[in-house]
Image (cartoon, rainbow, N blue to C red; front, side, top):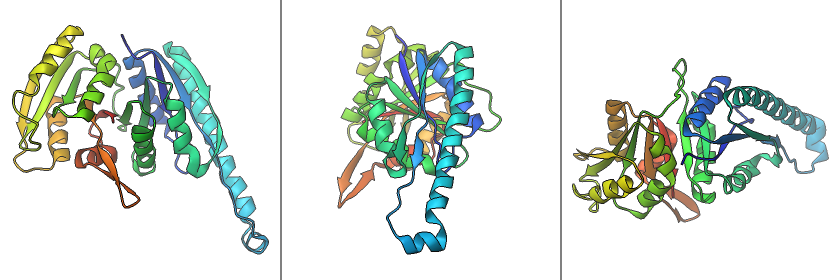
Length: 282
């Protein structure tokens, strides 16, 4: 059964999602199956009342100008999305709520809670989207796919190879369950265990995943890779490049410490520089 209800996040401010990134992400969403709803929030900028500063700097006028920029980007992106999604037969609607700039990630997370999966396109500079991705992964309760658009790349109209990064942990199990619709759509599924990285990641730990997937009609093969002391993010990137994978499935790990949310090494690597589309679940 494919994903039935997909949410596609389109950024409007300060750096709107590029047309190319939005187009490639929509094509990937169509490969996942189901209907796609796009959300593009119209950012509002709240200013503290300060008459002197406003008179000197025209802060109010500047804020309205930036809000207008966000609204124009929302209209542009959603109009292009609607036309393309209708043509592809996957149009599920468009949402364009108003929200204060710093409240947008929490708003998108709430919308994602009633969707099967949320897709976040990354363009050339993924920096503005990293905070959004982190909030959705750990606050929505739903899986998130980070989709890195590549300029000039051919659209991904199908999922060729999907890799499951499996260490036997709870987060990996959550990702495995969340990814089943995508794995059913993939032509090839690989269960990857990286040795000498975690004590739980042994050569035999993936065997039961293969059994479980078989009951869902998914044939999977097992691959192991010795980290040899390398950082987990670089190992995953190497395997993705070697296999030309279209999707990487992995658990997301993070915890709070001294008022700061600290991400696990692999999670941080994938949020900052995903080598392919990455489905993360927590």
